[in-house]
Amino acid sequence: MELHFWLSDDKGLPPVSSCYIRGGQIAALHDEYASKDVPNLSRFEERPWGMKEFYVHDLDGNLLRFGMIPEEA
Image (cartoon, rainbow, N blue to C red; front, side, top):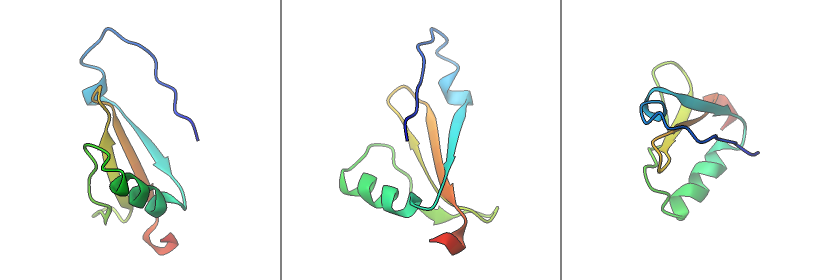
């Protein structure tokens, strides 16, 4: 998977937008990120809306959200 971002002079854009990535290997990805001490990594947990998710804010403030149906874990 590749994510492509573009350069923007609007510093207000990253804090009000996000990308959601859903798939079956999300648990393994969180384990990998945690083992590499990725900054701004949230816990991987089930949310009230029924998805198991974690979040990362990149260095420019973009919110990357990763999730899966808990039964797929």
